[in-house]
Image 1 (tube, rainbow, N blue to C red):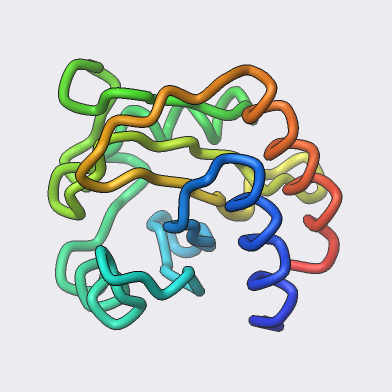
Image 2: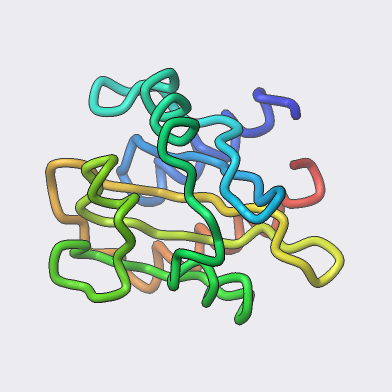
Length: 143
């Protein structure tokens, strides 16, 4: 996996949303596998990866991920604390808002790009969502 390609994608997503925490997870063996993220003061790469390895997120146990895999569509949650679709992993990592965009190859969801807000609720606009979905789709063959 070329981290420079992910960094380029993350930078563009950050410009669109003004959010700094962006991550790519590969779906493998029925769970999320952390591949790469932006390094920020709120959630470092090491803390993010160790959190995932210590608390694996299984697709079969996570309704929102089941829905994304089934529908192959994004999910935007602007206020995780007041949205019943939120998963335990959101709270484990301290997420207040989460835009989850599937990476689809050969009609299968191979991974997800998460753009999150920590310590502050971010209301995703449809314009932000549409532009981020376009960016992920433009980069999917490079991931």
